[in-house]
Length: 485
Image 1: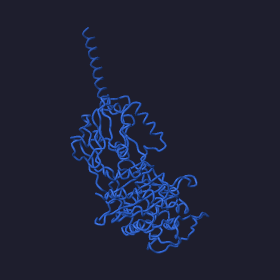
Image 2: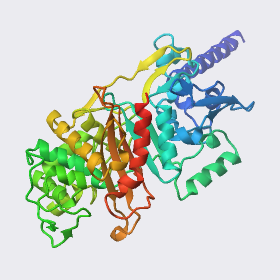
Image 3: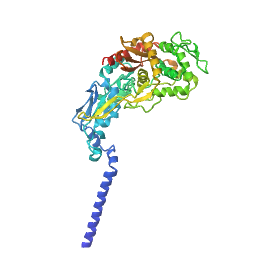
């Protein structure tokens, strides 16, 4: 009898050891899989059990958290939600996160290892720290000037500090209140359905996620390529461009909205925006050198992050000469985000040195200690310093004696370029009005800001000056806010 009891005890001990080994296996090798299982709500409950860290503009929080008393306790709140939605994005218990709320989620939710008191602390304890804060580079007065200037029209504004790459304003309209998506239940799902069904697409971040044909604002890039390639050595000398100009290999005549473009100089072509001169120069530069030049400005870069991802601005790498001619004046398949065109203006203003654009200045722990600082770094040398100086003069002429006079600011050096981007079947759509610019105080050694504005539903004729009429006043208001300090 004792022998059978011993065997039973040994068998039970074996089962116990097997259970312990299996428990250890699950904890060591399957913990992550179980944590990530959609049926496991513990992570979700833990995620919303504490207030989320905040996103700051000018030292003040534009986000918050409120205790709902529900199982998912804390919901995200937004101060001036529509104004800052293109910066913050949303943090929704139902639909996840976007933009800074997504890119800096680890800091804001308290799970980032940088917030832990010791290395690997969170991994060992499976704990989370209080949510940290994200300090943005945005300047409130500039954000408001851009938002008010667009007045709810479909469009976008991007403003960059040329010497550092700090993004000072990022606006997209029409906008939406991200707080409407924060929680759960039918009010949130109904709001989501309405926002996604809206023809105006309010949740589309037009400043960084929408690309447009840049129209004549792209002529600044073509001018830089022509000067750097030595196709043009004297911007004030006449060119051999005929008017009318027939696109190479075709019988299609390229029109000019401006007059006096026949054999016009590069400087004159920029001032009055001659299509023929700039298209001809793009062909003379050649496809390979044009592709190289546009890449230095950021075109065709699908990996740009600010820290949110930015849509790739496009310049085709395989084209016939007639297509290259159209691409060189911002038509054909050439497209750009407003941020990309602000980068073009910034590169000119900063002597050709294009700084990497960034929207986050630093992240901090809950107690305010800096966790990570985002410094200024060079993105590309977009053009030679001498080319940049010549383009600065040409862009100033556009404002002082050309199509961009609506951007002029008394006592301030302002450079600009208008643009009208035609689109739709047979260019039947209302033209997009563009304006890119930069401004520098006379007593300052560096430019204060570079701005790009696009207005989708501009009331304008097809003349290039429409960018000056619809978009330039918005750019001027944003530049004035930057110069006010």
